[in-house]
Length: 597
Image (cartoon, rainbow, N blue to C red; front, side):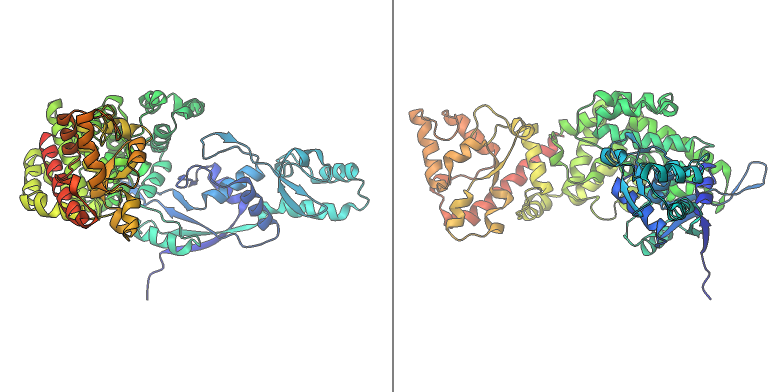
């Protein structure tokens, strides 16, 4: 007979709120911050008033841990699902402020019309209307007297029969005695199983990952400052995207006095958005660089106190894990570390976030940077190794599938072999002559403009300080950092006129970074026409397409964009030959670029 790994109990709403206030149940803020709008809070209170089902809360008990004196400490329950409903109750019934998606504290006031038994979000018109109780929290206030509220309401609205109003006010106040179902998961359930249970039970099918559970473990821990550490991660990621939120976050007086907040103050003036990490990214980088492991489920276990050798839960293990994680988070946030790392990405030619498709590729590059920094490697050696590893990872799609497994393998091999030796092994295996000569050109047979291979090609042009296609003055970097557009060497409308479909004319080997005005001048001209005109304008000084009139400068521009020879005689019949020739030239350029890293 299967073992039931959870229990289901009904608890009054007031009891649940009391438990949360007293920290018997911790809210991990997995769904940070409060994302329900006021209308959804209104509908939730209306459902409770009418006795409609509102779903279950899901709690997961932390495992008991062995203390230093040998005794066991009972684990605290963590609210895995139901934060939004619980916070809606605090906001509506207790008048508590909530933190909205912009990290601003705000009040949500729900109004009740006793005569019509109707709820609405309070607004100016409702507050002026005596038929409404503008804020239901007044009914739930500890010192509220229902009879007095009823009398005042009836007098203001000239209601003769108080009994209906009294019944409805009591019914409203009785919401706090309504029961909510709580599904409590056993402490010994693995993280993966908890996530599966959550998805199966939750009607919306919201997915939770190991990073969410790690955040919940931190939120439930005050002994080792876990709750502030979780807030630190959350605030850092928010400031990285919205530095203007600094003044609002600084109002959190308890947190603003911590080392964590001081460590992220530099973000208030930071406008660079090349690497804007999520809390998952931040945890993944910190965990792998500090603990030399790839699976975030292991972090959840360590924060719970799991000793992997003895397979028991011990306070000493949890304490060490929290301290190690704290040190790693501070290293991650360090202004010098973060800015130098981003500088390395930019020095490789990745000057715009649109060139980076895989966040995990960036994450492991930062793991590598932090690892090398901790080993005391010379700055120039760090720059070279991180650049090469980053570009190698993009070209080989190293972290596209099963990134945690790849992270674990790579950090383990780096620890055993050293970065230089291990990277050399990878290059010999995966970046061989066959890759550059055959594999990479084949991979570039695609119409996806955001292809990682085309992005690396653009990065190579940035690093080489190449001018835009047929541009005399503007560089590819200028175009990428401005309002840039990709255009076609064989004009799109020209190929469409000859029956080419989208997948044929939109090939990355047909793409160039070109100024819009040059593209407009070319229009739908056949390549043989406008390339002939290009060679003519170098002789007569006319500038129909761009401003280049010098022969060597024109030749250099075409070479920088890997344009095959003979384009002044190229017709639609030569299109496929052009694509293959340009793919091979682009691959050769990327190879030469890689060697400069």
